[in-house]
Image (cartoon, rainbow, N blue to C red; front, side):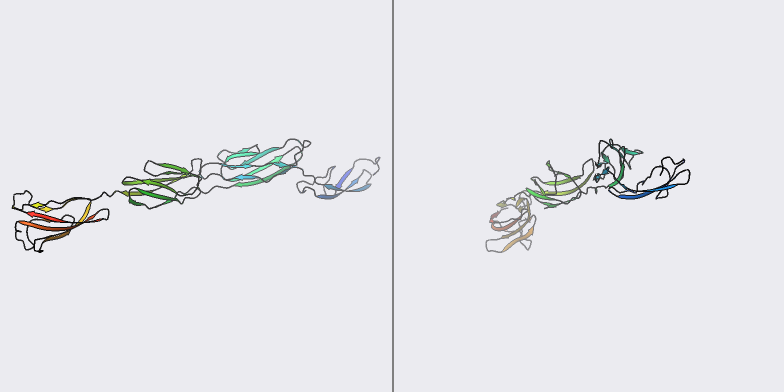
Amino acid sequence: MNTNAPNPYNYVWSDGSTGTTFNIGDNGVNGETIPFSVTVTDGCANTATANGVLIVDQSLEINPISMTASNFCNPTGGVSAGVIGQTAVNGTVTYAWNGPGTNNSNSSTNSVWNNLNPGWYYLTVTDDVCSASDSIQVTALNPPVAAMSANPSSGLAPLNVTFSNLSQNGVTYFWDFGNGLTTTTNDLSAVQSLYTTAGEFTVTLIASQGGGCNDTTTLKINVSVIYPPIWEVPNVISPNGDQANDFWFIETENVDKIDLIILNRWGNVMFEDSSPNPIWDGKTKSGNNAEDGVYFYKFVLYAQDGSEIPGQGFLHVTR
Protein backbone atom coordinates (compact mmCIF):
# COMPACT_ATOMS: atom_id res chain seq x y z
CA MET A 1 0.00 0.00 0.00
CA ASN A 2 1.15 3.51 -0.75
CA THR A 3 2.69 5.01 2.36
CA ASN A 4 1.17 8.33 1.35
CA ALA A 5 -2.34 6.89 1.47
CA PRO A 6 -4.66 8.91 3.69
CA ASN A 7 -5.75 7.80 7.16
CA PRO A 8 -7.44 6.09 8.75
CA TYR A 9 -6.11 2.57 8.17
CA ASN A 10 -8.36 -0.40 8.94
CA TYR A 11 -6.91 -3.89 9.49
CA VAL A 12 -8.85 -7.12 9.04
CA TRP A 13 -7.08 -10.38 9.81
CA SER A 14 -7.82 -13.81 8.37
CA ASP A 15 -9.64 -14.88 11.53
CA GLY A 16 -11.96 -11.86 11.28
CA SER A 17 -10.31 -9.93 14.08
CA THR A 18 -9.37 -6.27 13.66
CA GLY A 19 -6.62 -4.06 14.96
CA THR A 20 -2.95 -3.83 14.41
CA THR A 21 -2.01 -7.15 16.14
CA PHE A 22 -2.85 -10.77 15.48
CA ASN A 23 -3.27 -13.01 18.55
CA ILE A 24 -3.44 -16.80 18.36
CA GLY A 25 -4.40 -17.03 22.05
CA ASP A 26 -3.74 -20.39 23.75
CA ASN A 27 -4.48 -22.46 20.69
CA GLY A 28 -0.91 -22.76 19.48
CA VAL A 29 1.25 -25.85 20.06
CA ASN A 30 4.99 -25.52 20.32
CA GLY A 31 6.51 -25.74 16.82
CA GLU A 32 3.16 -25.30 15.06
CA THR A 33 3.01 -23.15 11.90
CA ILE A 34 -0.07 -20.93 11.63
CA PRO A 35 -0.76 -19.21 8.29
CA PHE A 36 -2.45 -15.81 8.37
CA SER A 37 -3.37 -12.87 6.19
CA VAL A 38 -4.22 -9.23 6.79
CA THR A 39 -6.14 -6.78 4.60
CA VAL A 40 -5.54 -3.06 5.07
CA THR A 41 -7.94 -0.36 3.88
CA ASP A 42 -6.94 3.31 3.81
CA GLY A 43 -9.06 6.43 3.98
CA CYS A 44 -9.63 6.37 0.25
CA ALA A 45 -10.98 2.79 0.38
CA ASN A 46 -7.89 1.43 -1.26
CA THR A 47 -7.01 -2.12 -0.04
CA ALA A 48 -3.94 -4.28 0.08
CA THR A 49 -3.53 -7.86 1.37
CA ALA A 50 -0.42 -9.53 2.81
CA ASN A 51 0.09 -13.19 3.76
CA GLY A 52 2.42 -14.70 6.34
CA VAL A 53 3.12 -17.69 8.59
CA LEU A 54 3.48 -17.63 12.38
CA ILE A 55 5.75 -20.27 14.03
CA VAL A 56 4.70 -20.95 17.62
CA ASP A 57 7.66 -20.89 20.02
CA GLN A 58 6.32 -22.08 23.36
CA SER A 59 9.70 -22.41 25.05
CA LEU A 60 8.44 -22.88 28.66
CA GLU A 61 7.15 -26.36 29.52
CA ILE A 62 6.55 -28.28 32.75
CA ASN A 63 8.44 -31.49 33.23
CA PRO A 64 6.14 -34.31 34.36
CA ILE A 65 5.17 -33.60 37.99
CA SER A 66 6.35 -36.23 40.46
CA MET A 67 4.34 -37.28 43.50
CA THR A 68 4.94 -38.97 46.84
CA ALA A 69 1.88 -40.69 48.33
CA SER A 70 0.59 -39.40 51.65
CA ASN A 71 0.54 -41.29 54.90
CA PHE A 72 -2.97 -42.44 55.84
CA CYS A 73 -2.83 -40.76 59.27
CA ASN A 74 -0.77 -37.63 58.58
CA PRO A 75 -0.04 -35.28 55.66
CA THR A 76 3.23 -36.77 54.43
CA GLY A 77 2.68 -36.52 50.68
CA GLY A 78 4.66 -34.33 48.33
CA VAL A 79 4.79 -32.92 44.80
CA SER A 80 7.67 -31.53 42.81
CA ALA A 81 8.12 -30.14 39.32
CA GLY A 82 10.72 -28.57 37.05
CA VAL A 83 10.59 -26.72 33.77
CA ILE A 84 12.30 -26.98 30.42
CA GLY A 85 12.85 -24.15 27.96
CA GLN A 86 13.70 -21.57 30.60
CA THR A 87 15.87 -18.82 29.13
CA ALA A 88 17.50 -15.72 30.50
CA VAL A 89 15.76 -13.66 27.83
CA ASN A 90 12.31 -14.74 29.02
CA GLY A 91 13.03 -13.95 32.67
CA THR A 92 12.71 -15.86 35.95
CA VAL A 93 10.19 -18.68 36.25
CA THR A 94 7.69 -18.50 39.10
CA TYR A 95 5.69 -21.41 40.53
CA ALA A 96 2.11 -21.20 41.74
CA TRP A 97 0.65 -24.30 43.41
CA ASN A 98 -2.79 -24.68 44.92
CA GLY A 99 -4.72 -27.63 46.29
CA PRO A 100 -6.82 -29.01 49.14
CA GLY A 101 -5.87 -28.58 52.75
CA THR A 102 -6.86 -27.29 56.15
CA ASN A 103 -5.46 -23.84 55.35
CA ASN A 104 -7.48 -21.81 52.84
CA SER A 105 -6.21 -21.41 50.37
CA ASN A 106 -3.56 -24.10 50.44
CA SER A 107 -0.78 -22.87 48.17
CA SER A 108 2.95 -22.74 47.58
CA THR A 109 5.37 -20.81 45.37
CA ASN A 110 8.20 -23.38 45.49
CA SER A 111 9.08 -26.04 42.97
CA VAL A 112 8.74 -28.66 45.74
CA TRP A 113 5.78 -28.88 48.13
CA ASN A 114 5.79 -31.37 51.01
CA ASN A 115 3.62 -32.44 53.96
CA LEU A 116 0.49 -32.70 51.84
CA ASN A 117 -2.81 -34.46 52.34
CA PRO A 118 -4.25 -36.64 49.58
CA GLY A 119 -6.01 -34.74 46.78
CA TRP A 120 -5.49 -32.90 43.52
CA TYR A 121 -2.76 -30.26 43.27
CA TYR A 122 -2.51 -27.72 40.45
CA LEU A 123 0.60 -25.94 39.18
CA THR A 124 1.10 -22.94 36.92
CA VAL A 125 4.60 -21.82 35.94
CA THR A 126 5.15 -18.40 34.42
CA ASP A 127 8.02 -16.40 32.99
CA ASP A 128 7.99 -12.98 31.34
CA VAL A 129 6.68 -14.42 28.08
CA CYS A 130 4.96 -17.78 28.58
CA SER A 131 3.03 -19.83 31.11
CA ALA A 132 2.16 -23.51 31.42
CA SER A 133 -0.16 -25.47 33.70
CA ASP A 134 -0.47 -29.05 34.91
CA SER A 135 -1.93 -31.04 37.80
CA ILE A 136 -1.37 -34.27 39.73
CA GLN A 137 -3.21 -36.29 42.35
CA VAL A 138 -1.50 -37.13 45.62
CA THR A 139 -2.80 -40.56 46.57
CA ALA A 140 -3.15 -42.01 50.08
CA LEU A 141 -1.22 -45.02 51.26
CA ASN A 142 -3.38 -47.84 52.58
CA PRO A 143 -3.39 -47.86 56.41
CA PRO A 144 -1.18 -50.37 58.25
CA VAL A 145 -2.84 -53.59 59.43
CA ALA A 146 -1.05 -55.60 62.12
CA ALA A 147 -1.49 -59.39 62.07
CA MET A 148 0.58 -62.37 63.25
CA SER A 149 0.48 -66.07 64.09
CA ALA A 150 2.51 -68.20 66.50
CA ASN A 151 3.83 -71.74 66.22
CA PRO A 152 3.43 -73.28 68.72
CA SER A 153 1.13 -71.12 70.82
CA SER A 154 1.44 -73.34 73.91
CA GLY A 155 3.67 -76.03 75.33
CA LEU A 156 6.21 -76.98 77.96
CA ALA A 157 9.12 -74.77 78.96
CA PRO A 158 11.61 -74.17 77.53
CA LEU A 159 9.34 -73.27 74.61
CA ASN A 160 10.79 -71.74 71.44
CA VAL A 161 8.04 -69.94 69.48
CA THR A 162 8.22 -68.76 65.86
CA PHE A 163 6.07 -65.73 65.04
CA SER A 164 4.96 -65.09 61.45
CA ASN A 165 4.36 -61.46 60.48
CA LEU A 166 1.11 -61.31 58.48
CA SER A 167 0.81 -57.52 58.54
CA GLN A 168 0.03 -55.24 55.61
CA ASN A 169 1.17 -51.76 54.58
CA GLY A 170 3.70 -51.36 57.38
CA VAL A 171 7.21 -49.96 57.19
CA THR A 172 8.58 -50.98 60.60
CA TYR A 173 7.37 -53.63 63.05
CA PHE A 174 7.84 -53.54 66.82
CA TRP A 175 7.61 -56.86 68.70
CA ASP A 176 7.08 -57.22 72.45
CA PHE A 177 7.17 -60.92 73.29
CA GLY A 178 5.80 -60.50 76.82
CA ASN A 179 8.83 -62.22 78.36
CA GLY A 180 10.93 -59.08 78.78
CA LEU A 181 12.33 -59.27 75.23
CA THR A 182 11.55 -56.92 72.31
CA THR A 183 12.79 -56.37 68.77
CA THR A 184 12.11 -54.11 65.77
CA THR A 185 12.18 -55.31 62.16
CA ASN A 186 11.86 -53.55 58.81
CA ASP A 187 10.31 -56.42 56.86
CA LEU A 188 7.86 -59.31 57.18
CA SER A 189 10.44 -61.93 58.13
CA ALA A 190 9.55 -64.33 60.95
CA VAL A 191 10.98 -63.81 64.43
CA GLN A 192 11.51 -66.17 67.37
CA SER A 193 11.50 -65.94 71.14
CA LEU A 194 12.25 -68.44 73.92
CA TYR A 195 10.01 -68.89 76.97
CA THR A 196 11.77 -70.52 79.91
CA THR A 197 9.19 -70.08 82.68
CA ALA A 198 5.57 -71.06 83.10
CA GLY A 199 2.79 -68.56 82.57
CA GLU A 200 0.55 -66.79 80.09
CA PHE A 201 2.45 -64.27 77.98
CA THR A 202 0.86 -61.48 75.92
CA VAL A 203 2.71 -60.85 72.65
CA THR A 204 2.22 -57.44 71.02
CA LEU A 205 2.96 -56.48 67.42
CA ILE A 206 2.81 -52.83 66.28
CA ALA A 207 2.87 -52.25 62.52
CA SER A 208 3.92 -48.67 61.75
CA GLN A 209 3.77 -46.58 58.60
CA GLY A 210 5.62 -43.70 60.21
CA GLY A 211 4.32 -40.35 61.33
CA GLY A 212 2.36 -41.94 64.18
CA CYS A 213 0.30 -44.12 61.86
CA ASN A 214 0.21 -47.49 63.65
CA ASP A 215 -1.89 -50.60 64.15
CA THR A 216 -1.57 -53.04 67.06
CA THR A 217 -2.47 -56.69 67.57
CA THR A 218 -1.86 -59.17 70.40
CA LEU A 219 -1.98 -62.90 71.06
CA LYS A 220 -1.38 -65.21 74.04
CA ILE A 221 1.37 -67.77 74.56
CA ASN A 222 0.70 -70.35 77.28
CA VAL A 223 3.74 -72.04 78.77
CA SER A 224 3.60 -74.76 81.42
CA VAL A 225 6.30 -76.47 83.43
CA ILE A 226 6.08 -80.18 84.29
CA TYR A 227 8.17 -81.24 87.24
CA PRO A 228 9.54 -84.79 87.56
CA PRO A 229 7.61 -87.28 89.66
CA ILE A 230 8.51 -87.86 93.31
CA TRP A 231 7.29 -90.84 95.37
CA GLU A 232 7.86 -92.56 98.69
CA VAL A 233 6.60 -96.04 99.57
CA PRO A 234 6.10 -96.99 103.28
CA ASN A 235 6.89 -100.57 104.33
CA VAL A 236 4.56 -100.99 107.32
CA ILE A 237 0.91 -100.47 108.31
CA SER A 238 -0.74 -100.85 111.73
CA PRO A 239 -4.52 -100.74 111.08
CA ASN A 240 -5.64 -100.94 114.75
CA GLY A 241 -7.90 -97.87 114.81
CA ASP A 242 -5.58 -95.68 116.88
CA GLN A 243 -5.45 -93.17 114.02
CA ALA A 244 -1.72 -93.66 113.70
CA ASN A 245 -0.55 -95.40 110.53
CA ASP A 246 -3.99 -96.98 110.01
CA PHE A 247 -3.74 -96.64 106.18
CA TRP A 248 -1.13 -97.59 103.63
CA PHE A 249 -0.60 -95.43 100.53
CA ILE A 250 2.19 -94.20 98.28
CA GLU A 251 3.10 -90.56 98.83
CA THR A 252 3.59 -88.83 95.46
CA GLU A 253 4.12 -85.45 93.79
CA ASN A 254 3.59 -84.66 90.10
CA VAL A 255 1.81 -88.00 89.52
CA ASP A 256 -1.58 -88.16 87.81
CA LYS A 257 -2.57 -91.76 88.56
CA ILE A 258 -1.41 -94.95 90.30
CA ASP A 259 -2.22 -98.56 89.41
CA LEU A 260 -1.79 -100.55 92.66
CA ILE A 261 -2.26 -104.22 93.60
CA ILE A 262 -1.49 -105.89 96.99
CA LEU A 263 -1.15 -109.69 97.29
CA ASN A 264 -0.71 -112.03 100.26
CA ARG A 265 1.99 -114.70 100.41
CA TRP A 266 -0.21 -117.15 98.50
CA GLY A 267 -0.82 -114.67 95.63
CA ASN A 268 -4.36 -113.79 96.60
CA VAL A 269 -5.39 -110.21 95.81
CA MET A 270 -5.98 -108.24 99.00
CA PHE A 271 -6.45 -104.83 97.40
CA GLU A 272 -6.56 -103.38 93.89
CA ASP A 273 -7.19 -99.83 92.70
CA SER A 274 -6.38 -97.41 89.87
CA SER A 275 -6.80 -93.80 90.92
CA PRO A 276 -4.81 -90.66 91.72
CA ASN A 277 -4.32 -91.86 95.32
CA PRO A 278 -5.12 -95.52 96.15
CA ILE A 279 -5.38 -96.11 99.94
CA TRP A 280 -5.40 -99.55 101.65
CA ASP A 281 -7.07 -99.80 105.04
CA GLY A 282 -5.59 -103.24 105.93
CA LYS A 283 -8.67 -105.23 104.99
CA THR A 284 -9.23 -107.99 102.46
CA LYS A 285 -11.43 -107.54 99.41
CA SER A 286 -14.27 -109.19 101.39
CA GLY A 287 -13.93 -106.59 104.19
CA ASN A 288 -12.17 -108.74 106.80
CA ASN A 289 -9.03 -107.64 108.61
CA ALA A 290 -5.92 -108.87 106.87
CA GLU A 291 -3.71 -111.08 109.06
CA ASP A 292 -0.49 -109.72 110.43
CA GLY A 293 2.38 -110.58 108.18
CA VAL A 294 4.23 -109.71 105.00
CA TYR A 295 2.41 -108.67 101.83
CA PHE A 296 3.62 -108.02 98.31
CA TYR A 297 2.71 -104.86 96.39
CA LYS A 298 3.15 -103.85 92.78
CA PHE A 299 2.41 -100.44 91.22
CA VAL A 300 2.74 -98.25 88.11
CA LEU A 301 3.01 -94.46 88.53
CA TYR A 302 1.73 -92.30 85.65
CA ALA A 303 3.68 -89.04 85.89
CA GLN A 304 2.62 -85.61 84.60
CA ASP A 305 5.53 -85.61 82.15
CA GLY A 306 4.06 -88.68 80.44
CA SER A 307 6.46 -91.23 81.93
CA GLU A 308 5.35 -94.51 83.56
CA ILE A 309 7.30 -95.72 86.58
CA PRO A 310 6.79 -99.34 87.70
CA GLY A 311 7.66 -100.52 91.19
CA GLN A 312 7.22 -103.40 93.64
CA GLY A 313 8.16 -104.45 97.16
CA PHE A 314 6.98 -105.84 100.49
CA LEU A 315 5.04 -104.28 103.33
CA HIS A 316 4.34 -105.48 106.87
CA VAL A 317 0.92 -105.55 108.54
CA THR A 318 1.11 -105.43 112.32
CA ARG A 319 -1.50 -104.54 114.86
